[in-house]
Length: 482
Image (cartoon, rainbow, N blue to C red; front, side):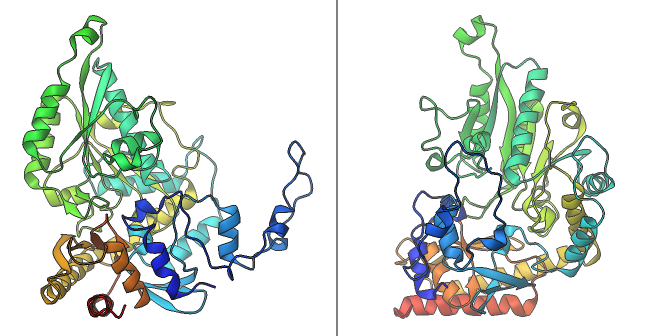
């Protein structure tokens, strides 16, 4: 069993963001939580032997979740010392029975909250019919979900995969193939500083934050073909495109040609501190792509599927991308990703150019269709707009009472962040820990921004409740009683 006194032990590991939870330093459980692992290790066969007598999970030790994570789960995450066992709507319940108001929603994933009846019913029904057959065959659910996505966006066609990183990886491959078709041998994709695009080798290279590159380079280099520019800086972007379009003389002699393949941007940077893009910056990116035959790619993994108050974040900026990606809320918590493209970009891939075994299987697409149906029939986007305004106003009100701790409030819809001032005496992650003691789940976005990403079905009373708990956490921090 975990205790609230352990929360601050997790804060150091989670001090930057949920991305920083990928760590080589585990959050250790207390000695009372971790028992001897002799029984677990006794089940491991000797090297070179063949496993024929299987031990069912029901016969293995399951007395301590913390012990199993300590001994059996690779330590790619630092975890808060809480074990959740159930959820309903915007509330999660831990193994002790304590309830928490969930304003993390699986990091912007559980759009319909927990145990949504429509989503649960759709998944359960699909499991009784057909859950997976591979992409060697047609399945109705994949075609229907592609149709919904394209009918409610600028896209013409969709490709399905399993996660945000995979959808961005697909977009990167598409951009390179598109550039190759134009005779470019050295295609370059521009991404923004402080961006976050995923954890695969290509997408983490696209993520323009050196701290995520450490230990994954070859000869000091990540995947070649990426250049970085400051977010929302038009002049720097224009200068970088001009530089990219000049092939070095020695390369030209070898018959090589460098050129712009794509500009890949988040409409709102999430892990970068909840920073919305500007209309001017995205208009410039669109113009540069048009002038150079390149693709404008929008990473909608976090901000898309209604979180901004419009279905897609790029709609907030009045720009039409050639390619955009989605995941997280697309399946309401069931793993699914999608890469959408329009026009010429939608015809770049042919059979064998890209694939995914699980991508778009009937089960995942049934979940996606249930989310799509719910968003469409329950006026969820209007709720996001109204509750987003309520949340923003409430955060600004709290900021006015604690100006020594809180700074700017930023974001769209139900993706909001409040800045923690440098001289506040605490980090964003420490405030997240304080809020957790008050029964409110929040998540940091970098070292100095507390992020609020509740389910899109959150109601007025729950927003007010969350604001009250957050202010109580700040009050205790300021008074020294936290």
